[in-house]
Image 1 (cartoon, rainbow, N blue to C red):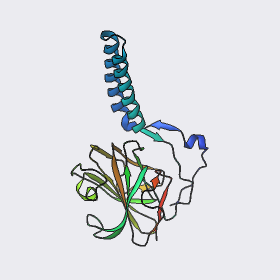
Image 2 (image 1 turned 120 degrees about the vertical axis):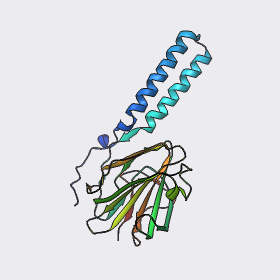
Image 3 (image 1 turned 120 degrees about the horizontal axis):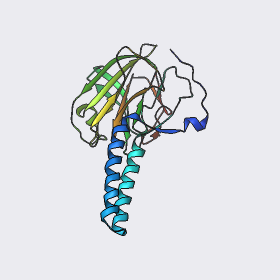
Image 4 (image 1 turned 90 degrees about the vertical axis):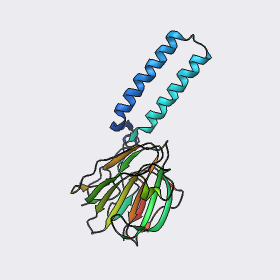
Length: 234
């Protein structure tokens, strides 16, 4: 199932665009902020107070633009038995756990925490066929807490590789996240470089690997979605 990877010039690979999930939010917020700035300029004399108000709104909008950025990326390495980071962030968990919602057995879990400043687009971590997609309601506790993986709102995608191994990726909501978007559908073939979804505001993504997988990252390591290799399957 390996697909050809076209070579992409670094300038294109580093190109930043805005994710379509942010179109409505950016438009509404932009109109509101423009109206506030207009009222400030019309009714408040140009003083340090009005300048501070305008600067605050400009910074807020800048944060929104940063949050919804979506860099163009293409994985350049071999994809056979390769699991790449599904998200930008920091590795906060590497441990064997009992996965009781789908596998009902022991799995090796790698968790990536996404802060407010990270890219929040999520990528497919490995190549194969999507065999399970489900969304579960839950809490909105802080995403870095261990129980967030099983108690927070979450969306699960299970991929069966050409070798028959199954990899589960779980998008987990956080204290600020209120919307998880998943594009994957059961029965689809999927490839590294495909977008899996998007999580609005800070959260985490968990990857459950077969026991015996070779982990390629360490705790507290920064990851780049669709670029950092996090594991090799057995």
